[in-house]
Length: 158
Image 1 (cartoon, rainbow, N blue to C red):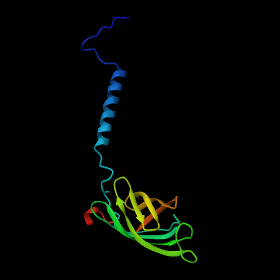
Image 2: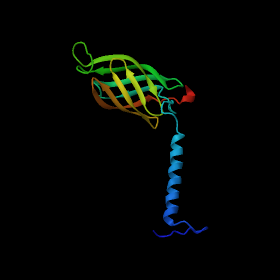
Image 3: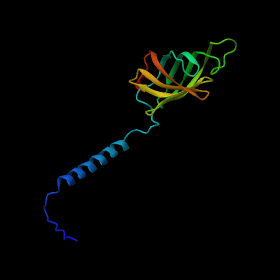
Image 4: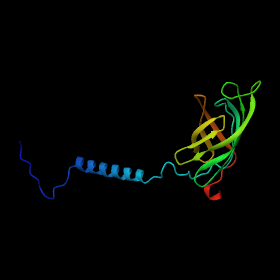
């Protein structure tokens, strides 16, 4: 086994400096992530307003939601839509007009709301102007995109 001699004041190798810099950057990055908001905190932009999606998704077309959001991120309101037989309960010949309540939340992680007796939406608000996600109904998941009819308010305007 060779004898290793340690020389005080010797300069670390390029590999050692690179490894140390990589470790420092990794620790800095991990610290920045740890400082982010809790995923259940309310989003910066509220959904309050009227939103429309042509569909089809979850047996729904021409979906309009009118919602308001409280400062804690809770969403409530109403929806109207046209439903189709099979995924929606249409008396008589489909399509049929259906309506109900909307209850959910808008957090930094996702937007979630349930349309009473019609389906569950999970998605994200993109640039404050597009609500993109999916509607789940009866084990089926379909993509959907809502656009504002009236622009959403910011939390300061709630």
